[in-house]
Image (cartoon, rainbow, N blue to C red; front, side, top):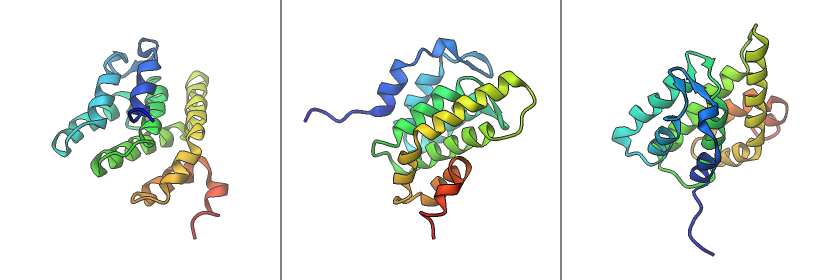
Length: 156
């Protein structure tokens, strides 16, 4: 077997980020911030966390870059990450997913929410696998949003 695959890096590199928007416009800077978050020291992690949270999901409002950001964050769970990184990743996933399940009036926005919900469901078994880990409570909150009917069978 060759070197370990960094699934988040591969996922991040295959996305055309120019097609997506964040609060300040085109999402060109999001891949670099994601990569920085996933490889950051505990001292720098908070800066990169807010570089994502304040740009793709702002006070519960989603921007189109939330969809590929969610894909990369889910992929990052497939690799071993430092504790502080995993906490930030799970919190960002929760923020994006919670916003995707909130009430919305605008049809175009609801369509984006549906796409993000589907992206979250693509990671369903990744999340269930994380129930066995140190952050089962945080993962349980995500699963409670996306798969409530099945979750009850896994949590006693």
